Length: 341
Picture 1 (cartoon, rainbow, N blue to C red):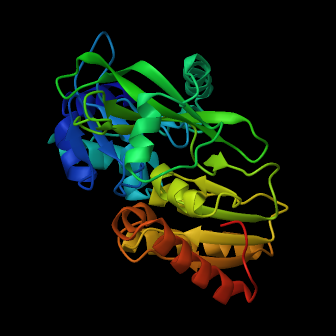
Picture 2 (picture 1 turned 180 degrees about the vertical axis):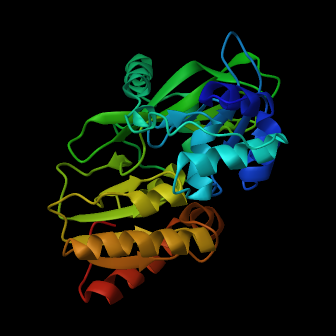
């Protein structure tokens, strides 16, 4: 128990207890602990394997938003904000109920700082074998939610793999969405698994997951060439609801509140509308994005739904009511008229 490898393996053997202690905002889904990031925030970007599975070791994690990966010592270092690896090892051994020996001076940190290019490549491959959503279960799913605007970022595949709560590999049809950076490079793929009988979100744990690099990027829906005005928000359904109300608006979905706060606005943008969800996480994300955008000289405005999100407003109030409330808010903010309804 005096080497880095010994301590890392011992923590991995108690991976679930470690996660419950150090990442309590997460939750167990099958053979994985799912949480927002290595800081322990709520969310579903970071996945930690809890037990041996198909030859893969427990205690290993990957953050699908950033491409970072590592072991439980990396998580412990982040949560402690430790000044030295000695502090990390001391806490690890305390957790394991061990005495405190002399510790190694440090360890390599390079493996947690490089993007996971293989996952971005896997995302591009999955999108490539998808098909346009017209006349598919994915189109039916979106139309049932009142959405009538789609786009080339969306694809459909009839059988996409996932692991269920029993750690079994299964397949279900899925709506796919391309995550891209400001240069248009595909960095990830958002997957929404669907129930083929009802055309609704499948009743599985975590039916919405992302593979690849999401941090700073988004699923984009442009009307023609990208302009100097953009509406950014969280979920795909939320942003396509706004896009349904105003088909000529450029909109993008950052998929979670955490990643809305991390979004990198395009350099030539003049006006950014933040269509946040109506909750504390959405408000925090909007504040972070506002600070970043205003530092770039971009004018920033908030759009807040009456209910939890704009798809809720669309389904409850109808298209005309949503269009009217959005138009009133946008015109009031920029002091002009708005066309394209």
